[in-house]
Length: 411
Length: 197
Image (cartoon, rainbow over the protein chains, first blue to last red):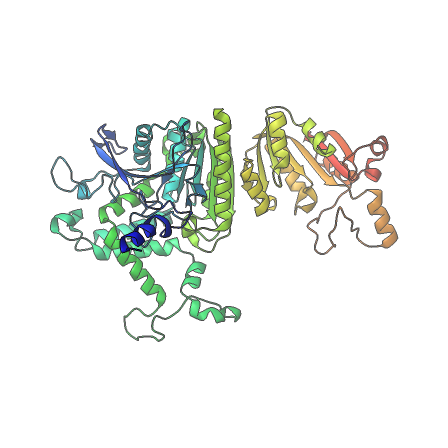
């Protein structure tokens, strides 16, 4: 067997699990029609980086849109190369036979405007100046994103999504779809989300923003022109963010393996594992949890643009579809024509179950059809990305039935 | 179809909105969706039953009835249904008030503890009745608020609830003339169609 043969075989047969979408290639879609933004500003032209998985059926009725959260992008599933260590951010749910079954559905994922993974954003060149937009990139809102997603939908020749699916900030885009384009959505799948942020949510976002903007390398957002970037600020922002994604119990479990025997004692496992087995009696990293946060911050700061991060957190803060309806969110959903599927997780304290229940109550008040699950999970907000059996089975069951209903309606 | 479900279906009008409290695996909601074109929502707390509802496209909300129904608007449903769940509630009387706040009409079904078999069991054995139908021991039963047909009649009178129709059936879910004459003694399952007074 030649070496070449081995590598080819690896590429086609052995590198990816049977339920993986395997190698995927993103595609760039250019749009020339100006996009009027909520802020009053206009993007004259823009690009959207898009990945798709599965095949669009002849009736064009099996398309699912995936909306990403704060730090996500178009790469939701599969691998860009055989050397990739990690698959797309929601590979646990997207693939042949998985909850979002690419053998049945045509799945579309994109990088939102203002992001930093290929769609037009702060690192793109502003045609007006020939320099990166940087801090001059307009503030984009959830509504603006959904407007751009709607144009992508038209470009793809899809008139109705079988489902629009998203968790967290992605769930907010799902809500906006149901409100702004009711005729284009058959099912709205909104996971671990909220109808708008609370003061505590906004406070954490502001800490993240302030840590970035106060970094001496931020240069009022023009760091690229100075050939630098606010690494420390981004790290700190991510570290704070990461704490809010995990639950107390998840952290105890993650950083307390060595103390597992304590579980049976009255002291319990507090997740206080030491890195080197002893205290340093200095300002060094002593505990595993510290080391983990540093690692997460480090990794994130190397891959994410600071201006994009600022924009994403602003989109979160500004989200409140009730503003156009005198503060009554139920009125916003009155024209929605889709079924809703909501899931929350017991230890999520970023968007806790109460916030999803608030949405359920609002949807009931609007006379909408709702299904809601409250899943017991230790992983906090992060649970929405995990392959938890109950959650995954419900998502699969819901979507498969949704496809049957769409097919039935079409015939 | 089971005769008790047939009776329930007869009480539900076409194209109406139905809230099913403790909807189980969604069988009834699915039936009335097909036969009566009903738009229904079920409440349930059992994960497996919720999954079953989801798979068959029945709207289901994971919600504990004992924590109240304050998330439902007055008059938001035509009929609110409580099938074989009354006896397992912490505050059955309050839930019935809530049912008739949310729906114009209510349907309540429950095992009739006044049935002669229960009476005989208690009077001859001197112990809490345990049967195939109610298989739990007194200390681990989910059924904490048993009542009889007479008890429920009295509660409706006290609350000024109108009984539109009352039916009793046996465990095979079949009715009879004698059961109509002596519902509290012979009926094993009681079915009430109620409305605000």
